[in-house]
Amino acid sequence: MAKQPRYMGGQAVVEGVMMRGEDRWAVAVRTPEGDIEVVTHPVPRWAERYAAVPLVRGVANLAESLALGMKALTWSANRQVPEEEQVSGKAMGATMGIAFAFFAGVFILIPALSARGLAGRLGLGKWQFHLLEGLLSLSVFLGYLVLIGRLRDIRRVFQYHGAEHKAIAAYENGAPLTPEHAQRFTTEHVRCGTNFLLTVFVIAILVYSMIGRPSLPIFITSRVVMIPVIAGLAYEVIRLAARHMDRRWVRIAMIPGLTLQRLTTREPTLDQLEVAIASLRAVFTPTQLHEVEARRAA
Image (tube, rainbow, N blue to C red; front, side, top):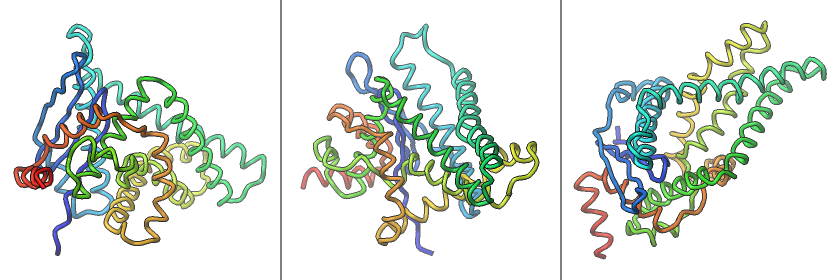
């Protein structure tokens, strides 16, 4: 079996970018003094034991990515404030737990219960009900992105999100890894978490349609319990799409998710791209770094 490519991935953090490579993950931030500070850590390997198990590998990779993301976010936030104002990993973990409960309640349970009530009044059929539920969930999600995108601090995070995409695109497309060259690429990327979330909403419609409309306690429980299954299926879809982007129908299918990224990315500045590139270079293997340096020399 041919070896699968090791894709680069990352996320935006407070005034910086986290990148994950083959054996290291790194966070680079712009400090209040204007310097770039970088920290690196070994990549955890526990999710790899499930790499050959469909669905399970998606849930394991998502859990591992969330754990790394929380650590990166905590470190980046602490670099921007005095020591006495810094937050602990435990406090950030509690915040993430609240955020997950918020996500489940606002984007899954409330639209589901609203659709259940409306379906009864409007006399909707099975597929009409599940389509309404999905549309309500997606509408709430889109509205949320539009609203938070108006906040100055969130807009800066969205700029760093765009910088992350551009830096990875420059590397994966063989361009010299400089802010000026990276700026030429789009802020859209097929492996983006925003694309993943849209895929989650679409798959949720199909999965929940198989459950039907049981009694209210089972109805609510199913919406929460099935989240890992839906996430695992979404991971498989995104993974398949990333491997077959050369096919026209795959590129067409990815258009809605790529379009949605316009809400979660902004055009970065060259200074922000410099931070993203510093994070990316920090996770390169010696072979990758040598290859990138050869591009600049050429």
